Image 1 (cartoon, rainbow, N blue to C red):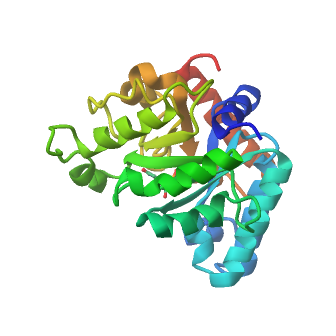
Image 2: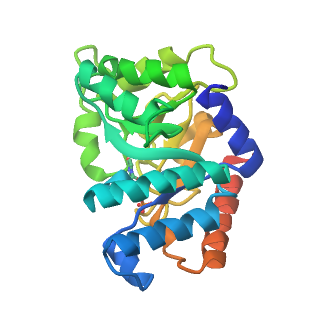
Length: 278
Ligand SMILES: O=c1ccn([C@@H]2O[C@H](COP(=O)(O)O)[C@@H](O)[C@H]2O)c(=O)[nH]1
């Protein structure tokens, strides 16, 4: 199996640099004329999958919106993952896991072992128990062609107090995360398999992303206020590695599948223009 970095590079080359989230917010279910229950969740996830699974490079289900319905929600998440992968999009499960290493090993087998019912192409992970504690995820990802996106500079305003705090050597916590992930990706071609999450909302923070050599997931576009034009300010010379991510901005166009596709196409056109030809 090719590495996640290779598979992502291929998907972006073929389909364009875009990630669309599946975030079935109660408000969106209502706007779509669906009840906030298991049937509404199923219809919402199925509609997005059928509309976008064969055209968007990466689809990012937000686990929380499935988890809130318990085991029935998880069953829908499992079938959504299967349908998305069958349609050819890479599935990035936004689940932000992180713990002591021995527990991270269990999260790794849950999401990155091909024999698991919730096996996905990549997951999001939190580094606040130490980047090193995520090693079992990095190892299983490498073994099975999976990817991990580690939070570095998140899109929400509350993140800055923790992420931009200074460590003993004067670097910010975020720069320490960035540097550790850069080491893990060193020498990988065309792209490493360990990505970072850097919000499109954060402006020019002066962090150095030039050595990451891995994908940079950029949430915060659309509903949180960032525009594709902001990507240039946030990422500078690291722009070619950016994977822009939209959820509500695209999902709000539903439930008509043509309208969903048109919204995703608009987002992709904006991102292509901002990132340069890709
Ligand atoms: O820094 C981060 C990390 C993750 N997210 C997630 O992305 C989507 C954003 O949804 P929008 O509707 O496009 O605002 C959501 O699932 C977040 O949990 C993020 O926003 N910022």
